Amino acid sequence: MQTIYSSDHRLHQGVELKDGAVSDSFEKPIRAETVLKQVKAAGLGDVLAPNVYERSCYVGAHSERYVEFLASAWDDWAATGRTCQALPLVWPVRGLPSTAMPQFIDGKLGFFSMDAGSPINAGTWSAVSSSANSALTGIDALARGDKAVFALCRPPGHHAGREYMGGYCYLNNAAIAAQRCISQGAKRVAVLDIDFHHGNGTQDIFYDRNDVLFVSIHGDPAVSFPYFSGFADERGIGEGEGFNLNLPLPKGTAMEQYEPALQQAGSAIAQHAPDALVVSLGVDTFEGDPISHFRLRTPDYLRVGEMLAGLGLPTLFVMEGGYMVDEIGINAVNVLLGFEGRA
Image (cartoon, rainbow, N blue to C red):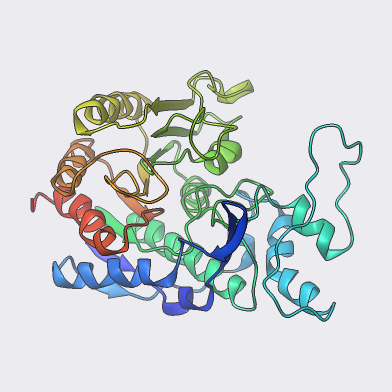
């Protein structure tokens, strides 16, 4: 299995507002470096740089004005004389009457954000576009006949919606890849999100569509970020009704409870009969993850990979979360080794 990786991810290192203070983000460059090291140690396959794609390849999953905002936000921020990382100041919450996009950068940051955990700095656009390009390169490899590809994306993407960033995510790499697959002629695609946190952005992008099935296994949003999406009764709207499946699980979920949910997800995917599967691969389901509360163990990820292989689909793995830096590499690669039958 080839891995698509760009060192441009190092250009972005953020801060976040958490526990009442601004501090270094849990989402940091060493995460991707640790995974890359394990990819090489395991002999998974070739490591290739992503191709370069036009911004238009991100449009479809995202709106054109949102992509333009991301590409220009740092320049707009720096033009005010500020050199610190850009974070939003105000959000368009319930009750505020205007739905118009502001013209000034402070307003734009709030308009296109869901939280204060996704700052923008001078290297952010280069990092997030190379991350999306890794996913696009991977989906193009599937179109050429590869059975499976690993897009080692950083920053992650599944919290980024059609017109918002959040949860360390800016461009939704998995959704961009799924959209390209459809644009190139696939009739149906499935996106399976196994990150601990609900993939609210991916849900947002495909919620009214029946060509992309979205399935997410995640911590109960009543007590887990992102709090405002991921409940079981969110099934899609319009043509998309019935094509969105959320499987929230309680605190302390171990593999004994997780495996039946993964089996249910697999059954829904098989019924959808997709031409390709995109897996949002988060390993923050690991016991002891600092911002999660499942209890999967390192050998469990081999089993996860085996179960995904059983679907028999061309599969793109897109790296998402996982914040136990010492374990993220082996856990992510165990999924891939399990998928290849190398457990």
